[in-house]
View 1: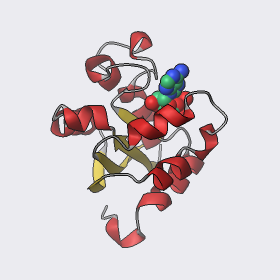
View 2 (view 1 turned 90 degrees about the horizontal axis):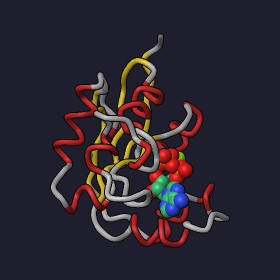
View 3 (view 1 turned 120 degrees about the horizontal axis):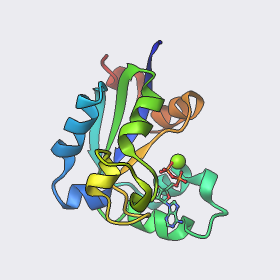
View 4 (view 1 turned 60 degrees about the vertical axis):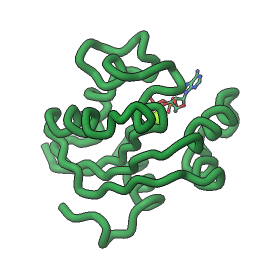
Length: 140
Ligand code: ADP
Ligand code: MG
């Protein structure tokens, strides 16, 4: 299997509870390496652009309000089959459905405030990485 990259966000519900380190440790323990990381307060424009694929969904407005409600940590993760590995350690979108030992089972507050984002395909990982990072900010 190839070493690939994925894009991760530690969401405002998690930064508010000081869980940046705990979540990053779970990512690292899952075999992922943080090769870029920045703490930002997302603008409304950034949130709407990042989640544009969801703009017809009923939760779109609330999601953008949530994602701009506090600091987030945007990260690039590298590892074997990184997109899949990260989705596994994140757990299901709804924490009620998430498996034991996953980040969302451990920490998510709700289906919206679910602590982490992770890309869902290699193609989207590249788009999402490029949305937040310049190539020279990623050090593998
Ligand atoms: P995932 O983050 O697991 O890839 P989606 O891409 O489907 O999930 O949704 C993006 C984000 O939108 C979710 O992580 C969550 O924060 C929010 N969300 C998804 N479904 C709902 C819902 N039914 N109600 C409220 N928020 C939702
Ligand atoms: Mg998604």
